[in-house]
Image 1 (cartoon, rainbow, N blue to C red):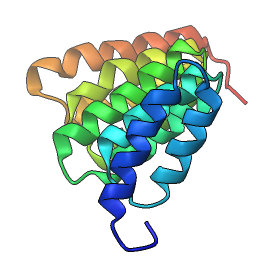
Image 2: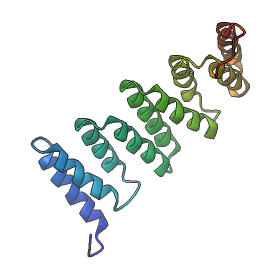
Image 3: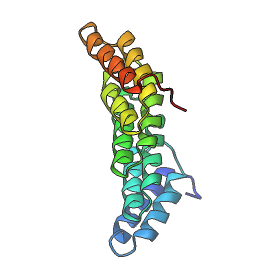
Image 4: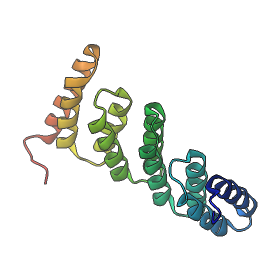
Length: 169
């Protein structure tokens, strides 16, 4: 890296991490942490780093690495897959609050992308945020495909019924 061959340094770091990952996963994680500071947007490195973070008990950090990788890519399909992947990992570690944050950001940026609708509303429901479910489901109904409008309005209405005149704090 000192001589300017960043890609070479990253490649060698990835190889070193593979050698160390079984016997010394903490060392492998440290190597990939350093390599990830050299250059942003190297998806393979992000995936490997996230895997080692999970393997060493740092699951929330792994979610953050994948979420950050989604922001670094210029490919909209890859960004969506990474966002959904990060949200799914957050759900797996019972951090639906993180999943909601990721999916809300994605929905705000691309409200027309229906990939976010169900996971977002399901995570809001899992968090017990019925008022938010009602608001988001109604908002989805204004941007979704025509044939889906009634479904989302029904979800919004059902959430309102569950509120039963109560307001959430």
